[in-house]
Amino acid sequence: MFEPIFENVRQKSPLVHNITNYVTVNDCANMLLACGGSPIMADDPEDAVEITAICGGLNINIGTLNQRTIPAMLAAGKRSNELGHPVVLDPVGAGASTLRTDTALRLLNEVKFAVIRGNISEIKTLALGSGTTKGVDADVADKVTEENLDGAVAFAKDFARRIGAVVAVTGAIDLVTDGERAFCIRNGRPEMASITGTGCQLSALTAAFVTANPDCPLEATAAAVCAMGLCGEIAHRRLTELDGNSSYRNYIIDAMYRLTPAELEKGAKYEVR
Image (cartoon, rainbow, N blue to C red):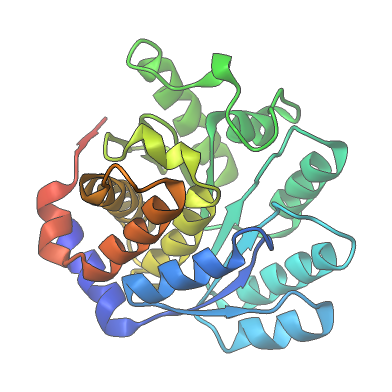
């Protein structure tokens, strides 16, 4: 299922416009290059609309919001909608502050998203209008586990149906759903949480996969999530006793660069509910 999706990314080399946070912008660019895509970053309102028009997809990440980038996000999102380009939203830290929550909800109201990717706390904030997000990490009480998986799947499906987008809830167990089917994905390593930006990289990666596969956004998103987790596994096997989280970050990008579509197909760990 995922092999032809990844092949499309490699062959089409989708150009993705990223309005993302400055903590991880370089890592997002390198992850896009590693998967076979092409990144461009433009977050000034006078630049963003024109740039997004020459791209195939848009990735919006609210991790380091400011009063200059919010208008750029809205304008670029609306222009992408006019052009029929897929838009991905990463609501980093939604629920942690009024600005983040209000901006995420405004984006949902004014822009049509193909995919919304966040941790369970961020997604709950968008679904319920408030939340208890601690910084940019999932609230401990909100982690998806084997014990609460059925309830989490039902919640994610309901939100996806209401919002009309693919919803990706990432954590120890990743959920990707369009409201009808849900991929429960078990790729990845807990050590990935020690690296700033793995979620941001995944959102950029998702934008590339969906842009290259516009007719199957659910499967494309699931493929991106599996690929990121699989690269975390491959990179972890490469670690030595002298390596830390900085090396691990680089090894994950290296693993994506070297990953083949056939290896993704073989290594993806998921079930569909």
